[in-house]
Amino acid sequence: MSDNNDILTPTPFKTAGGEKTLNIRQEKKVARWLLVLISILACILLFVTLWLPSLVSEQQNNALPLTDVANSSSDYINSNLSPEETQDTASPWADAALEKSKQNALELAAEAAEIQSRLEKFGAPIWAPDIIKDVELVASNADKAYRAKEYGLAAVEYEKARDTLLTLETSMPDRFEKILSDLRLSIDGGDIQKSEDLFSQASLLNTNSSRLAKLDLRMNTLPQILTAIEQSQLLEKQGQLQKAVMILQKASQLDLEHPLVLDALEITNTKLTKSQFDKAMSLGYQALEKNNLPTARQQFTQAKTLDPLSIEVRSAITELKELEMRSRLFILRRESAALESQENWIAAEKRFSEALKRDKNLLFANQGLARVAPRRILDQRLNGFIEDPEKLKIRKVAQEAANALSDARQISRPGPRLKNQINTMATLLEEANTKLPIKILSDGLTNITLYKVAELGSFNSRELFLRPGSYTAAGFRNGYRDIRISFDVTKETAPLEIIIKCEEAI
Image (cartoon, rainbow, N blue to C red; front, side, top):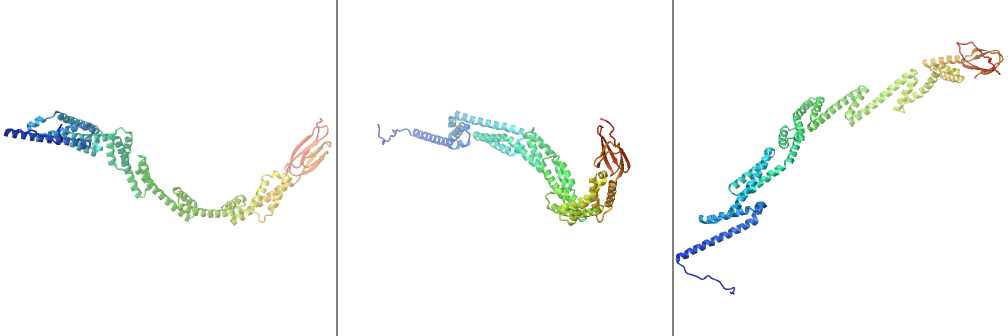
């Protein structure tokens, strides 16, 4: 075993001068080739560990490095070797890797082209022009790389284009919803051109959508709605608010959801209401000045209907109520005086009572009520007897009538009605109190009783004087059936004869 410090050296040998030069040249060539090979291997190691993972996908990591290594190795070797040496370094392994990288790029390009074809059927260049242009630019760069046989770079670009198109295809439902939302906003905003553009885009994405059909109906009515709004604005400037409201109401039937019409209708209605309110208030105050209180109330009531919370209306109605009360009190006072003079005590009492309900401290009403109430009572008492004079035949009723007549005669200044009542009552009482002759015939054996007058006993003939009225007489005799007779005593029947005899034996 040799020492570590021993140095091994080749045994020198002599050669011919030409042979020595050839050996030196060959040694230099081998050394240079070894240096190039080591450099290539170092580049491959750096490429695989640092740059390649961030450039390509996991699938391509298995193929592209081989292609790039082969290309780099081949290019580097070919650049440093002679044509004879280049032919000697050709590698089937590198060629196969390069072909696989090319095939991968072609597959990615085909996938991207297929997705783009599908998107074009849905009009992607119209509703996503920027994305399509970006994809075409990426594809163009990929094509350039492919033509330069940079298949790895081409594959990366083709994959980027494919993924972008795939994302765009996946976003079609969301894009349709977004376009529908923008379409609604453009219709609501009255933008006809933008609405038509958005509708075209939405139609490409989903032709059979029922929601799109509804928006189509709204879009078709948009020109009429905008025209109606313009007409209403012109009529409003001319002061024809009522016509403006009618036009907007008709337009609102075309699209019940359109905010432009609804807002315009609300604004115009508000202006119309304000105009009607001002007019009603003006007419109401004009009527107040002319003391035309019913018209004033009608106008102020209309104004209150238009603006129930208006302070101006409250003030006007308060003023109106005060005038109405003063006017009504004046009327009540005048009417009550007239009714008193007409001796219409019931109606006069009602007027005074109404006045006191409005103001219980009114002097004329309090005095008037105290004056007419007793007259109304007396009037009703007298009329009760006059309207039913038959009651006077009853002594108690006749006495009450006499008392009423006495009260009536105490009135210092009786009117025509009371005078007539006094005269009528006096006549009725006189007739009621005037006794009329009546003759009762019997057999001297029958015991006779005149109810409510006296027990007359038995007799053959007897004459009595009775007040007008209805009477009942009864006859009694032992062994015979009783007899009862009712009769009326009046001026027309006087003198009256009545026969009372018990003749039926039992």
